Length: 159
Image (cartoon, rainbow, N blue to C red; front, side, top):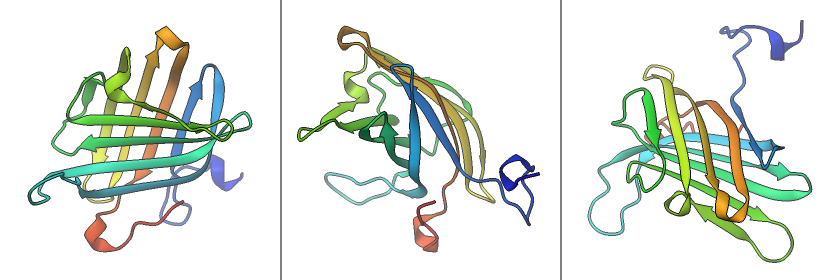
């Protein structure tokens, strides 16, 4: 049995997961990081904690980045992603020389479901989807299961 198919244990910890399909093509993650940190503020002191998930990879031959920024005061449940001040998603694709960046404030539909958060281990699990049907852009089947260590602990490292 390979390490990827074994259940999580102290000896064989389960690897972090981030996956999605972009217009039915798989997003292939090459680098993934999670962090529990203070949200950057434009003015004033930083006092609001977020989970920050950053996934680099590619869709087909195009370099792609997906980012999720989630308010830590949210309980498990499903949340509308469109114009939500407590959850932000960013999609960045570089097809040639010009980058395409889509932000959740521009999405026509979308949701994030928080399934579980373990404060002892920092593991965060959930699903997501979003779309801008006017331009034929659709992210579906999004799933994450990632450890988000506290920034203050100095444990943040890409996986």
